[in-house]
Image 1 (cartoon, rainbow, N blue to C red):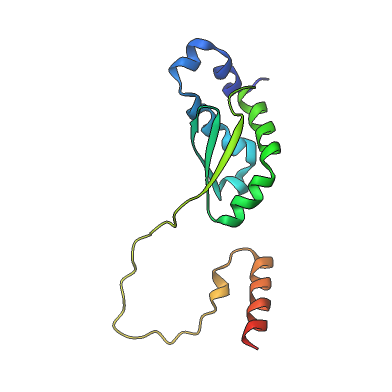
Image 2 (cartoon, one colour):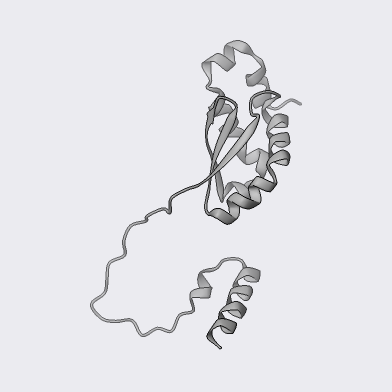
Length: 134
């Protein structure tokens, strides 16, 4: 069964009613997977180049190495000729709401490594931090 994004991209009347960039951006998560899509977001299609915002320079560098595979997956999802290149841009950090400051200092001992969700990365961070302190 053919994907709906390929059908829309192939039919001229439907393609004209939908922006090509919208079709490609909608197919981004399917092309890269949920885990990568959580860190990199397709923003817009400029001519035949897809602009992708990434969390940091590390994601930017790693995804640049996977450009060919991502383009192949996008071609499978939306059809040939829609995306010829990818541009990865580091997005500015998101600013969330400020937390209210308390008048009394908190004496809880917390480890900043607890904020790292991945257990392997948390272990590496703690080990590296221990070497720098010693």
